[in-house]
Image 1: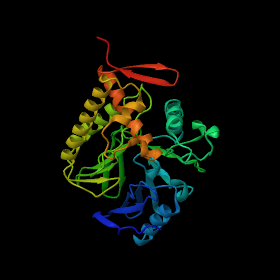
Image 2: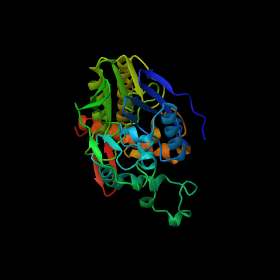
Image 3: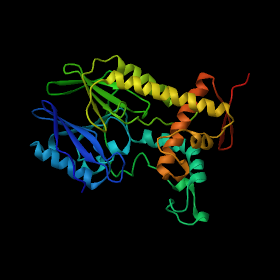
Image 4: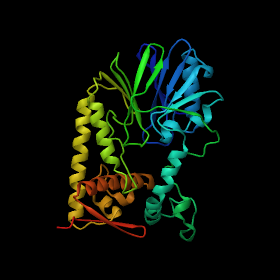
Length: 336
């Protein structure tokens, strides 16, 4: 089991529990434990992995709690935040999230697969593919970083929408819908202590991934709108899903907006320069790591989704147009 850092007291009765993420470059998820006399709220739970379940249970015991007092609150649907739910859930355990069920996530993935499965088929190598020989490869059977592992339990969700209030003891959290990184993303704001549990919308050092596979959904516009919404809150400390808690939320938001503006300009220049497919454009972008073709399949997948999100934004601005022929989407300069 990965050695984990010590549980950290953030504020009275609010603790950060670093949960290991095996085989992930993120290394840890920040799970937050909120305690009152008769209730323990766990915000986000890690992968569907025994190390994650053991870490959560160990933290409970170290804090003098047991599972009978636990409510689960999920900031969004990604597997590093939700997957362990299947391991720790017990009948009667309350689950709160900005969704009615995981079926919503599955439905979206099924729609998006019409775009990303052909792309995966075009970039996958035999060494990366579980099905072996090239003649056996079928992208429809290959799920890259699937949002959800198969869940054996059917959870009853309590829906949390924008502006709702979640209470635990003396703490009152305002729910802020912040789509973009994930359609179902929420943040939690405690106005009395000016604290924001931010999930993956605002991170300390990492630029949150924003990707889209449907030309009808402008995920980047949603994300930038969420950043603008958060900008209006008076926040002293941000508790992110990954990395260290930090101050200076507005400065970090300004940085993220500049980052995406620069990426939009880069991708627009590539389209105006004759690069027409998602694959070609992603290959030409200036990523943190060079030699795109040597990347692992997961990294390529996310870079393609991010490229697509920026292209869709540019289409909606009228700076780029697109055409569809079968599974092929081409991006071109706008008509004069």
